[in-house]
Length: 629
Image (cartoon, rainbow, N blue to C red; front, side, top):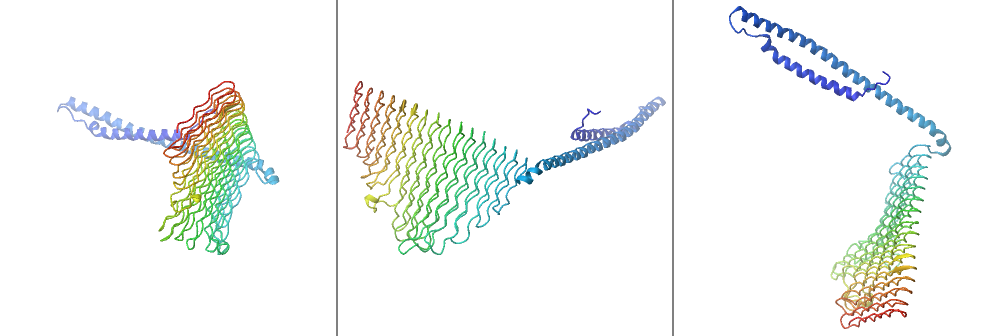
């Protein structure tokens, strides 16, 4: 019997099934009682009467036995149901006793470390209470997650997440409360707790709080709180925590800092940095997004606040893993009211996180949008803000890995409506692509942002809004790889003399590698000269030069020059063509050095000349052809 087990749920189910069977049999017996106990004689003779009486007697005996069987069946079902209940009560008592015993054992184990170090040996840390800004408790020294930080109350920062011990995840940082006192800057979000020393993920950082209402004087609105940094991961494996987002800047005050200087909205908070990955393997946390700039003041002419910077991406594992992407920049504050207020500039994107031995670099964050200008009523609308810069892509792994792409520059803000539309804002520059290290491809440069919508004709040609310049491509690996392509320039004004060129292609490495292609110039018109980027040079020993980028459409942008071939063996890159639909010279072809052909010159557009062909190698090679006008 000691080897027998009972499943209470199965016993209870069997009792229910037996009760159902008994009900069905009782119903059948009741239906058969009348026709079987009162059988009519087939005739009037004595034999027929005797046969009918015999069958009726048998039926009555059957009904008596059925009644006794039903009583036994009912008693059996009752006993079976009671047994199932007893088993269930016994199991519940055993579970409760086991749980109580387990907790008693844990309390006994944790008592010494709790008394000495203020944390258990095994167990999770306590969470900070919401609205208090309390930090989360640390997890057990051996096993346990850190507690989450409590959110901040009004005018209070968020609590930090608790750290894990040897094994476990860090707690998340608490979000900061918003500031409600005039002139009080926003508070920072709590930092995420670190993961376990051996294994565990870092906690995410908390969001920064918004800046308080505008001060009565001082000229600048309150600053948004910074996002909390993400927690770091463990030693062997773990993911870094993401950085928290920055808080929004406060609105501009009504009075400037000094006579003749208009007030401005507060700067958005910086996004928190992503936490680093484990020392051996893991992924770094992404950087937090920068907070938006504060609005301009609705009662006076003023300027929207600058957007906050995006947070840096977290580092990858030292042996292998992906780093965290940079956070996006915050948007510039918009112009408010009917006083032709200016939009704020967008924040810069954060750089991608660093890479270990093996792995690709991370993408840089995109720049924040420029703020829109305010309405001018019957007058001229406000000017749009400048778009934020893209973040830089991080280098690839020390041994193998491609460089990360640069972040894109953001669009400029739109000019505000009014009797005359306000001036458009310029676009942000694209971020540079990350370099490869030993083996790998360079990162692509980010594209420049275009100008916003708005008036350009009334602006002097030297002050026209301009698209952002494309980011340069990253260098290829020293042993093998290709340089990254340059980013394209952003669209620019159709009337200005300024230009947005494409980024240059990345150069090849040391042993073997081709140069990257130059980016295309930004589209424009009139006298704008958005030139194509230069092609990257080939590596020192073997590799071709990259092609030059095309000039910006509808302008006077020249094509970019092709890159030079490698010193020992490699062809020069082709020159880029002049501006399509405009008047742009072709780019010159790149030259070879010892062995290789020169690159062909790019074609000019309109009446502009084509580019010259590059020289062939002095030992062997043909010269490139000149481009057509």
